[in-house]
Image (tube, rainbow, N blue to C red):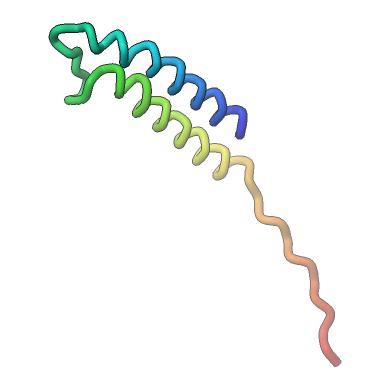
Length: 74
């Protein structure tokens, strides 16, 4: 799971470092869902994908550990 978040972090840093500066030179800013396109593709979408992966992982693979039996006091 840490690897998935590391990949997401690398995507966010890499994509945004390139796309944000490229968007600076565009006369009309390209919009997507009312936000600049680079913020949706570089921040919002990876965040949603990483959170969906985390929820899927937690619901599918994580399990509670059974508690050990405590000795009864006599």
